[in-house]
Length: 186
Image (cartoon, rainbow, N blue to C red; front, side, top):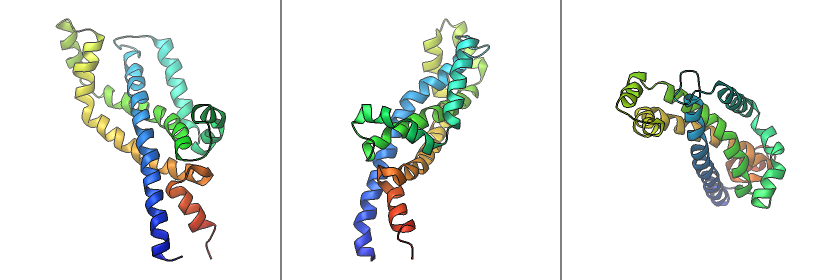
């Protein structure tokens, strides 16, 4: 296959990968940010201390994070079909990509938020700030550089996940790699 024949395929595959990773990142941030903050708030000494809830949420995050992505794709086939109406294609791949990335990002958020100086939290509380004020005015702004780095790390992980999804019908660069790299290797 010549470059002129391969170039349109690669262009479409890059677009498909960006589409899957972009939407999955948005969903992962929307789901993982509150989950990670909740893990910090409900921990021992947290503003909403609830050790039982923290342990349950933490265990769910740990189990979901440790599941191999290719297994997650298969485990979520029926859930994906219920949401998207299909189990193949780039839209269908967004579901397992997002489900796999939410706990990953939540743990990164938890780590980033834990780095915030507790003295700042105490100062806002001393001035009468409630939990929502502490989260909105202290925890998120003070951890923003780490949250941006966490988002970048999640995007890189999602690119790898999308390549795995491509091998089972999602399209994108993983599909090109398996079809034109592995199966047609001479």
